[in-house]
Image (tube, rainbow over all chains, first blue to last red; front, side, top):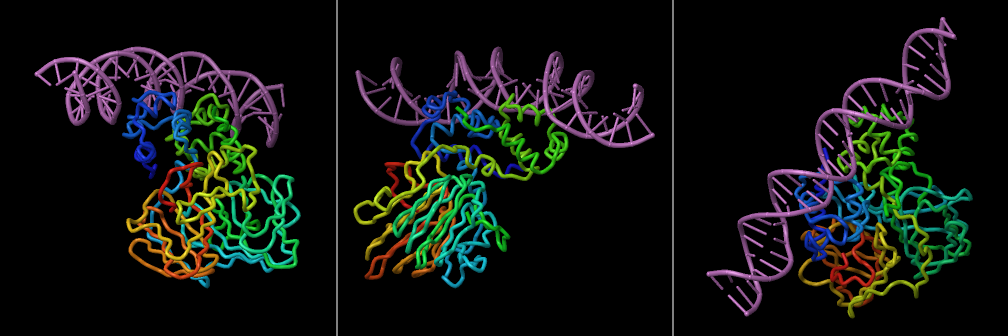
Length: 193
Length: 193
DNA sequence: CATCCTTGTTGAACATACTTGACGGCATGA
DNA sequence: TCATGCCGTCAAGTATGTTCAACAAGGATG
């Protein structure tokens, strides 16, 4: 049912940092036995305990449980193969749209002059970030408005009300990433995050 | 310590679906009491219980805890503010490096001619993807080798052995995203995945 | 009004997670 | 060889999560 090896994942993260069970336990405020039992899947930890342990790594619970599936999927995408998800005015190209349970949306976004995600701000779960590759974009997040140009970047919690708008007279190109992914295949999402 | 209201989040998700505590409990294979106590934060559920409940919604644990940390973080990053993480030859700029528990690494990567992530292939947890913004890169994933040029993209499970190499005579620029994030602030990671 | 349903809450019993304190294994070094 | 130290594991006891069963509050029906 679980389908996710909590013990193995914890062990992996702990060892990656070169920590012993006792060392991690000390930092987390639990005992080494707890770590041991969890890593052996002898117990299913309480959320509070798991959080204490992950905080000591540090790894968010969300991260901890990200990436549960591992299938043989398409790796390389020619420009022409990217899934077009524009809505007429805006033009986006989604990488890996057909991956069933991917952990991110990566999008090649084109904002022609005047392009706008709309007056009622976007708000949704997750985080998003990106790099402005060309042109200029006006980004509003949680009331703050900034003009970003090539080389600039952004990263924010997607629950903060936000809006993208090209107020310049030339195209703006952005490569962005969302987590968790906003777009499913053939998705009907309006906002692009 | 927790900083994340498990009870409120569960209640919100349950009510959003119009389910009663008993109804949800029935689907999840737990009792209504469990739901009630969790929603009141009278207990910190075990991961196994929480998973059963979330499966019945259905919501992944990762989703459930997405945005667990919802602090006031930096949103806008000027090109000059991006954290440089090059190793002398390769030059990368990391977006949001100081965010404590961000769910992704977003990186503006520069590969000069001859740049190479190394002969022993990179392998690590997570997924990664990106868009080639300029130039040409040779990407090897799981034995397959492809030349990708501006507009092309990639997405793969980072546990597949992979390598990036600029075999052309001009710079290659990529915007990539990793999940979970490979780089911590001042991280000593060698691979960039 | 009574009756019957559904809602969320709660005390006591029970099941499970967690700690304590021990153990054997495997190094390093006197 | 024996001591020291750190490693992960485990049995027994304690703390905490979960269930069972009862409860009160609110709405709908007659």
